[in-house]
Image 1 (cartoon, rainbow, N blue to C red):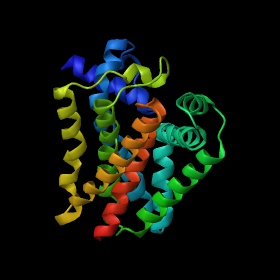
Image 2 (cartoon, rainbow, N blue to C red; image 1 turned 60 degrees about the vertical axis):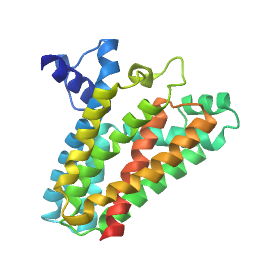
Image 3 (tube, one colour; image 1 turned 90 degrees about the vertical axis):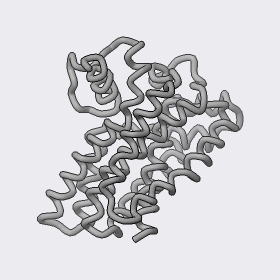
Image 4 (cartoon, helix red, strand yellow; image 1 turned 30 degrees about the vertical axis):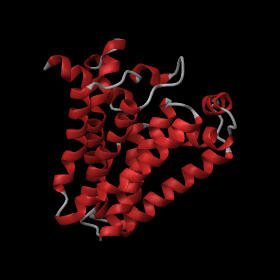
Length: 247
């Protein structure tokens, strides 16, 4: 149990700004096995953002509460996944070859494709959450953050890491069957909070995951850390859109 807690805090320290101190591990072997807790980290992020939304909605209209929840998410994670989305969009949009694409992704400067992708993602999340029933939003945030962090774990299981170095290299080991199963349980469990058929919104992730996974396979032959962040962002939005479509 102590080992599993260390792996969870390792994942929490990597994906968020939440201070974990000595609870997190710095061992490469622990990094490689911590990805199974990504959806559980998403559950923590989702619960915190849902609390911010609920508190803000006591005094302000839904749109302001949604903005507060989104800002909280960005602060908690340090915009980690959004940065991955922007870098992946720059590389995949501007690179003609695998080498060009990887080089552009590694460039710290924000390009046109990245800026547009980031702007559209934030606006789409804001609009979608604002159109949901106010009572749906906290549960949507909890389920959406957990479920969308399962998608990168599935990508890690299905494809190979394509860089020789990089921040994502530490998590490049393929999750084994038991780790994949545990991540799936953590990712899908919050769907039980949703009433009626709303849990079916999770199906909206499937075409998005398949499309982006195929794109990465064709252009890169695998994934990078930025691609994992982009996958999380795309699947989070897909879940919110699925909920809205079912409303």
